[in-house]
Length: 123
Image (cartoon, rainbow, N blue to C red; front, side, top):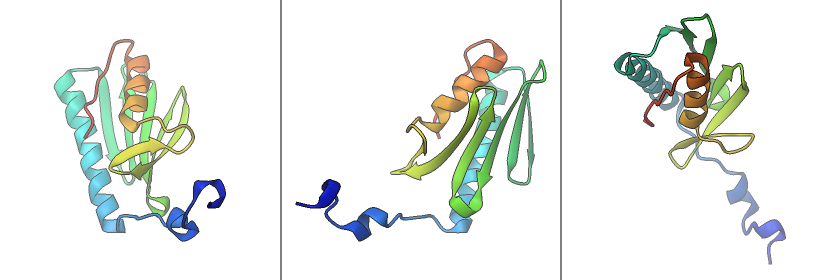
């Protein structure tokens, strides 16, 4: 029996990663999707994209920062509730700390800032 249930330690350590170009294209599409959903939802947020950072600002000045960390191929969210790092696993962006789904965390942060329910659909 394999130790800790790992049958092939090399397979467990190998992580299939996107190319840098694929990661940049995917994160650009994700940022555009977030902006589009906010516009369509009519919530009181201003979105600014600069470099690797999407800044979402509520009417009261509260900011939610979404950025991409290209070397690790992670998406990060910074909000009043804390900082979160997400990595792609089987087509889903999950928090490295607790497995929370990216859009679930983003929606909670946006809802807290807007003081109303915000629902950005999963891309």
